[in-house]
Length: 138
Image (cartoon, rainbow, N blue to C red; front, side, top):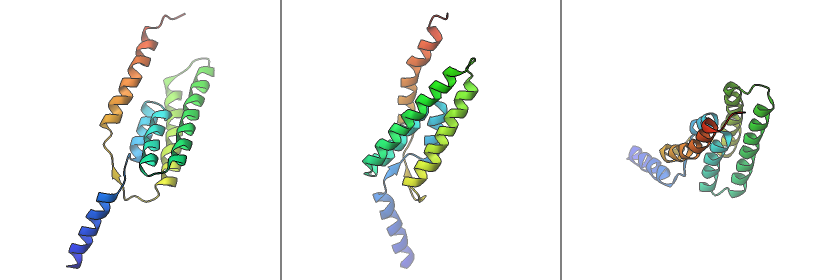
């Protein structure tokens, strides 16, 4: 009987748990796309957990990380995608390891599916890639 009560309690806790994007999703979006994409996922987690002030801090931080990446890469004589990915990884690690752990310290979360966010991110990124590919070079 006691085991049955424990499993029922666990099921109830999972039913009331806030669904969030995982640390891996935040890190992956930060590396593949840009830190702002990972920041938006983490911001959504915080909004879903009723932490609006913290959500805005994370968003501003991820915007600053993205701007810093652009400035650093563009200041180099020869910009490389490796540098961009390394910077994105560094910023993504800060978002996923520092901010995520700060606001979601326990590991008992139900994670959201990333597919919708992935399709939106790709849809946002494609026009920028096309503009880079088809822009006249000097």
